[in-house]
Length: 296
Length: 298
Image (cartoon, rainbow over the protein chains, first blue to last red):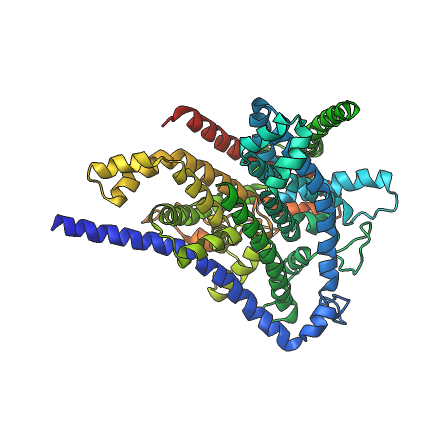
C-alpha cells in the first residue's frame, strides 16, 4: 500500500516537473501568437509590399508612410558599428585570456568582465548620450547631438564580454595535444593561437559572434536614448536615426490607444525583429552544437 | 633565423595587444563609474531617497522608483524561480532523449536570446490587454518572470550537472526513490550553484527597462502601491499588485530624455543607486560561487 502511494507520488511529481519544462514552449507559442495576431490586423490596412519597400516611416505623422527600411537601416548601422568595435577586441582578448594570460590573471579578469555585462543598458545609454557623444564631438565637429556612432560604439563595448567570454570557453576546450604538437614544431604562442587554436575552435567562436550580433540587433535602451528616434534611410553615422527597437519604445511612451494603426505598427515591426534575432540565434545554436560534437 | 626573431617579435606585440584589448572594457567601466559619480553624487541624500519625482530637478527624488523596484524584484522571484528550477530538474534528471526534449532545449536556448523588448510586446498583448491586468505591478512582474525564466533554467541545469553521479547512486543503493534522491541529495548539494544563478537573474530583472516601458510602467508616479500588510483581517493585502508603478531604470530613462540639464544630475544619482544594487547582487553571486568551489571537493 505504502509502496503504491509512493509510486503515485513519484509519477505526480514527474508530471508537474514535465509541465514546468513544457511551459517554455508555451512562452514561444505566446510570443508568436501575440505578434501574429496584431500583425495580421496591421496588414489588413497596409500592404505588405509597401511595408517592405516604401522608403519612409512616418506612422505618427498626418501623411502616413509605413516603410520599414529606414528602421532597419538604423538597426543595421548601429549593429555594424557595434560589431566593428566588439569583434576584433573581443577575439583578441579571448586569445589573450586563453593562450597568454596566467591563471591568476584569468581568475581576476573574468569576473570583472562579467560586471561589465551586468551594467543595466539604461546606464550605457546615459553614458553614450552625455559622455561619449560630447567627447566625439571634439574630434568630429559635424557630429549631431543624437547620432548612430556613439550608441554603436558603447553597444560594442557592452558586447565585448559576450564575445570574449564565449570564444575563450571554446578555445579552452581545444585539446592540449593539438597545441603541444605545434609547440614541438617550434611555433610561437601567436602561431599556435592563429593556426591551431582559432581554426579548431572556429564554430564555437562563430557561435559567440552570432550571439553578439543578435544582442546588438535587439538592444533597445542605448539607441532609444542616444540615437535620436528619427527614422531616416541613411548610412551616415553622424546624424540622428531610429532603430527598430527605439521606434517600439517611442510609440509605447506616447498615449497610443489600442486598436489604432500606430498601436499595430509596433507588433508588425516587432515580428520583423523577432524573425531576424531568431535566425541569428538558431545559426549560433547550430555552430555551438557542431563545436560540442567535435570536442565534448 | 631572421624569421624566427620576427615571429618572436609578433608574439610579444600580440601579448601587449591582447592585454590592452582585455583592459578596454574594464577601463570603460571605470570611466563610466567616475563620470556618473561626478555628475550625480551631489544629488544623493536622504531627500533624494524619500521624495517623489517633481517638475523641479532639485526637489525630485526616487521614492516611488526604488519601492517599485523592490516590489518587482520580489514578485518576479516568486513567479520565476520555482518554475525555472522545476523545469531544470526535469530536463537534467528525468528527460529521456527524444524529439520533445530536443525541442524544449532548442526552444530555451532561443528564448535566452530573444530581445527583451519582444518580451515587452508579449506582456503588452497577453497580460495588459488579453488578461486585462492593465498597467499593474503584476503585469510587469509576470513579463519579467518570463524574461528571466530561461536564465534560471540554464544556470540551474549547470549547477545540477556539476553534482557527480556517485551521489545519486549512493542514494539509490540505500533504497531511495528518484524524487527522494533529488529532494534530499541532489538539490541541497546544488543549492549554492542554483542560488548564484538566481541572484544573477534577479540582477538582470532589476536593470531591465524596455519591457516595462512596453507594458506601460508610468514615468511619473507620485504615489506608492498599496502596502502588502493591512491593518484588518487577514492582515495581508494583494491590492498593491494591481496598482500602477514605476521602477528605477524607467525613472532614470525619463530624466535622461528631458531637455532640462538639471534632470541629468537626478538621472546620474539614480544610476548610482541602481549600480550599487546591481553590483552588490553580482558580488554576492561571485562570492557564493567562489566559496562553494573552494569548499566542496567530491
